[in-house]
Image (cartoon, rainbow over all chains, first blue to last red; front, top):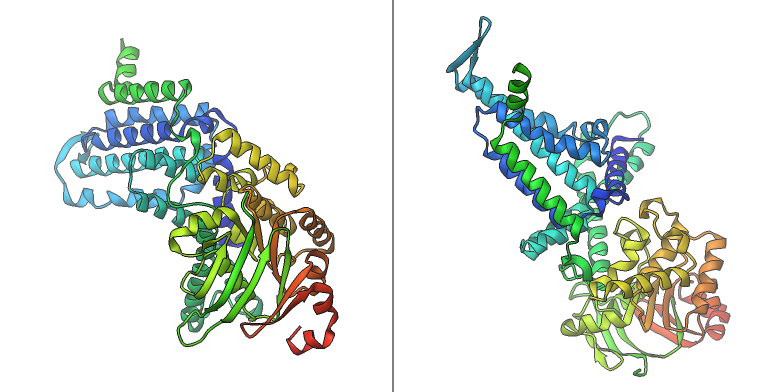
Length: 267
Length: 235
């Protein structure tokens, strides 16, 4: 399987995962979206040196990964491209902020080092929360929830269509590169001479297919709104999830779990 | 129920202003008609179907569906009445599973959830693909995709069905299956194809097109039986 086919397969696998019959998939997308927003907001709100407090926020992803039986190994594999980028964000902090906060043995730990680690943890937690959301909700459901939060129609439609078009674009890239490889068996990769025309053709073909998909959606009554009858109804389980998870996240914000557990053990 | 019909009068259309793809197209189709539009590649068959469903509205002449003119402000009504099956099923199917894709139109027209469910089941039954309901779209074969794409428009309960090259990329068994399904429909059907044998088995009337014009129109057996006429028009 080529890298592009692998990427298409990954998207389909995520779609299939979002359509599974687990308890978390059955929850209303709005509550999952709200919990994700609350979690991200709280994670970001931590002070840039408060590693101790921040670490306790790991409880939410751990709890959901275990109870919803999400595969952590698969998650890390899927996030292998994003996570290094997240880690890059704070990489230069140690060079700019050299104020020593404490010593670990003879090594001086600077403020820059701490803020780098905090940034990385914040980034990883944020990505994990987003992963939980997309692994348990279909893109249409997330878009529906966004509309319920009065996110502008144009913005939501854009998200929905970009998601659809990414697959189409990858399929076209795959077709074109396969066609090229079959007629250039001794070449590794694509010659730079063909880059221009190939990129242009891929773009045109992807646009053609994208407009056909959009036409198909319009012909079946799509106008940017999600009109399913039950789209606004939250049931008991939704409320339980929303209230309990929000309470847990707020509790973790103000109670440093690891410090608390550590103190109890020490006593 | 109003009398189902399509009236096309003196329609001219071009993708750019200098060159018309369709020239003076006129025909009438009424309830229970099954019309085949045949012609060589580039004859204008697909463009004509797209005009009927309002994908392009900047044409000259007039197109009326049950007395409603096809124009920008009537598209919602027109599209509730007409189901359009694309040549490329890949473009028609965009949701994750078959059930969701078939439910897309009735849900978008704001029907109650129970009615959506009923329509989905009916549509899947009509094309004998109930067993595929929960299957992801990307796991369907070409023939299955074609049948599911027909189900996606049947769930809209349209009065009129337009199909663009429905037999393309179907194996003989799926082709036979599709023919028998189409023949069981009582809708007004318009099928564009250069598969003459397929048209012969599904349509009672045929319109022959060439170079964006209607060359002749009549009973399918008369037009398809005229080998000379077909040869002259690239078929």
